[in-house]
Structures are given as C-alpha cells and as structure tokens.
Amino acid sequence: MSNPAGAAFRRMTARSRDETHRASTPLELFFDLCFVVAVAQAGARLVHALAAGHPGNGVVGYLLVFFGIWWAWMNFSWFASAYDTDDVLYRITTLVQITGVLIFAAGVPRAFDDNDWTITVIGYSVMRLALASQWLRAAHGETGDARGCALRYAFGVTVCQFGWIGLLFLPDGAKVWAFLGLIVVELSVPLFAERRHQTPWHPQHIAERYGLFTIIVLGESIAAATVAVQSALDEHEAVAELLPIAGGGLLIVFAAWWIYFAVPIEEHLVSNREAIPWGYGHYIVFVSAAAIGAGLEVAVEQSVGKAEISVRAASAAVTVPTAVLFFTVWLLHSRHYKRGLAQQLVLPVASLLVLACTFGGESAVLLAGVVSALTVTVGVVLARREVAPQA
Image 1: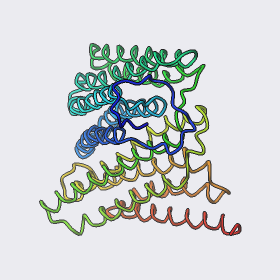
Image 2: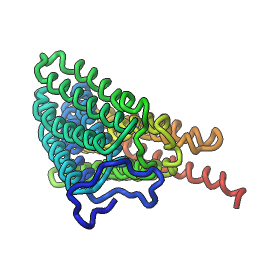
Image 3: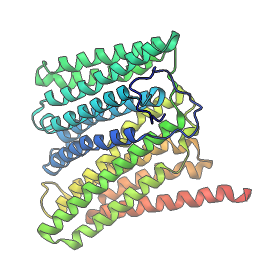
C-alpha cells in the first residue's frame, strides 16, 4: 500500500489476502537491514566463544540472543503482512522498533560475556511495546472477532514484556531457566490470539519476506567470512590454508541459496495450520544460516593458529550448521514438492554427508562445499527427469 500523499493517519483495517502484486516495501527492507546489525553481533560473540574453546556457553548464548532477534522480526513481518497502512504513524512506529533492535544489538556483548541482559531487554522492550501499540491501533480499526484477535495480541505481547523485565531481577543462575519459560509463553501468544480468528496475512508477501531475510543472513555469512579471510591474509599470508576454506564456504552458501529457493513455498501456505509451523521452523533456518558464517570465521582462525581448538572442532563449526540448514529446509520446504523416494532423500542424505565431512581434516570445509554443490546438481537432474516426460 503506497503512501504518495503522505497521509498522517489511516484507519488500520485488514488487507486482502488476495491482493495482487504484493511486495516488500522499502520500509520493510530497511527494517531487515537494521536487524543484520544484531545478527552480526550475535555471530561475532559466537566466533569468540568457539575459537576460545567454550562451545557450550557460546552456542547457548547465541541461541538465546538469536531468539530475540528472530521473534521480533517475525512478529513485525506477520503484522505488516496483515495491517501495513504505510501512513506516517505506522512508519514512525516502525522506526521506533528499528531503534529497539539497535539498542538490543548494543547489549549483545554484555549478554554473552557477563550474563547481563539489561541493554538487550531494554531494546527488546522498545521493539515489543511498539508492536503492542500497533495491535491496539488495529483493534481500534477492526470489529468483531478481528478486534478480539488484535486485543489478545496486544495483551499477550505486553504481558510477556513484563516477564522479560522481571527476568532482570532474578539471580544469574535462574535467568536461563526463566528465559526458556518466557520463550514458551512468547511462542504461545499467536496460538492464543488467533484461536477464533486468523489474521489475513498474505502468502506471497510472507514467502518473500522470509526469503529476503534468508538472503540477508546468508549475505552476512559471506561478509563475515570475507573479513576473516582478509584479516588472516594481512597477518599471516596463509594462502594455501585459506583457499580451501574460502572455496568451500562459497560453495556452501551458494548451495544454501539454491536449495532454499528451489520451490514456490507460498503455494503451501494456505492457513495457520501450515504457516505457523513453517514460520516457527525458520528460527532454525536463520540461526543455522548465520552460524555458517561464524563457523567459517572460526575455521579461518584455526587454520592460522589463532583459535584454541582442534581442526575437527573448527570443521564442525561449519559442517554442523550446514547440515542442520539443509535438513530443516527439506523439512519445511522441499518435502512438500518432491516426488518419489530419490528426490525426498537428496537433502537428508546430503545432511549426513556434510556431517561426515567433519572428519576430513584440513579439507573438511572444502569437502562440505563439494558435497553441497553435488547436492544441488543431483536435485536439478532429478527434477529435470521428473518433468521430461511431460515435454
């Protein structure tokens, strides 16, 4: 919905699910770009923890921080798909949410290193309470079940936010368990809010939004790995050690992009029954895609002697998230469109083969890249055989 006249206020009512040519707006793209700052901060702290030989604390902290990033992004995206008015008030409220994610990103190092979640919770509060105000505005513009749904969203988001603020006053040992409990409550809000009425999100728009964020996360992985390779070359000139990692990393990211966009997933998003598991499952897609970049950085640091871990541990930092990504994309996307056992087995088998590459020594990342490229090749060949008789 364009806003050429710069209207300050429009009545916020549901947009049509059948709206043609629905695409992401410049504001949504800007929103995504600002979220990359938080993704980069989380990835940087994960690299530091893995390279220092503290995978447990690093992975747990990364998963917890990434939940806040993903959940705030996801809630905004689904709300915008149903109620984006593109007026001045909507734009300003969205910019407030962007401010919140930048505050959140600034607090990520403290959350990782000192278990101090104060700044991140403040940033999260700004994002979430701004979203609650959007739901209240939607409730004002709606009637009947749609109004009740919007009010339940506003109530649920606000209650959860009080819980996050309360978490700051708990002892350090209790914070992780309280965090996990609040995650369960947060994930339950859409189920609670939409039990009588489904918000009219747009399937093509949602599929595009998720696809664009996947591209941005993969791009962040490439950027992080490039910086790591450049720094290693400047300091060590270890070309022979770095080329296999760089080449394998590129093949992995290229294959991840190809595999993700191989099917038109919007055709599967018919109702909440399909869309909610698909949308929730993308937490694993996003977190693993971003972790690939962190893993490549760790592999680079290990190859030049800057990481206090073994070759196998550094290789696992790349192969594990790659395998998880491939399997999750199959689970959420590909299996709905594959025909026959051979097509269905491509990605699950590829995930196992990528994991096996962990034991490939200094060539592990390159081997994983080759497996990834072969996975795409096999998938393309099988797909062409499927359609060939119809030609």
